[in-house]
Length: 106
Length: 254
Image (cartoon, rainbow over all chains, first blue to last red; front, top):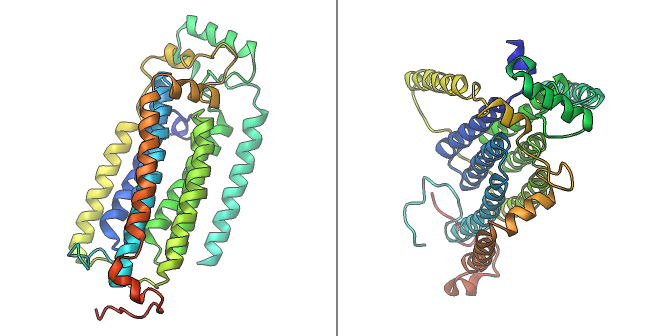
């Protein structure tokens, strides 16, 4: 028990990433506000990044860092486009509840 | 609500301070992988490497102080993430997200991804957080979402399933071992200039060497994202005549 507490290995990082990913999945599934869903997606991307970096360290291979950097850039692009869509939807119908979004037109 | 958060903050600060002191007063990062797991040759190599430079980062570092720091930052990550999922106030959720991202940046630092840790802080806790806050301020609507209704039986079954699945996941992942101990102890080899694994130089060498095409593709992607975001968020032509009116013009009756 104390070895799990005091000897942090690669498994700890993987478990932390898995827990973060699961919380993100729960957020996407449970919440209805589009902004919270976007934040949860960011959380999931970060968890995937953490896994990439853990395996990069584990195998001693720097290409995981490249991949993580790309994921960060894609996440930034996704956030900007996603928030633009949220603003456009809000302009049309005055709420961002994904359960009420049933059509693509105004 | 306030008091438990304050107590939690105090406990976390104490753990962080203690862990930092422990981590910095430890002579070397040598005791990460238990000695018993290494064969004699590797042990000699590790001893030589650590004697050569006390701060050589080729040895996975996790003494007790590192472990305490890990637990503290992991608590920040998970707590912030839970804040995102549970808060109804959007600004509170965003701040939880920032806390989670800062914890994740610290965890990256523990994985020797120094450059990516700083990028994480700049991009997520800086840029994306500001973007979210701006959009929340533009929307400016209190949230009135109920939690999705589900019966007591559904909650119990769902909770048990989640506990079981997470338990299995943790049992599996916690046992992940490096491909082999010797490679893991010495593998992230230093560059000719020193032990800068995960630094700006190392990431740049990787990015502009094998990853050059991907780097250029990312630049095009970001350009498209900028143009697309502006094109989507711009008011449509038929909206332009009432664009200057106050925001209650098109109130949804629902």
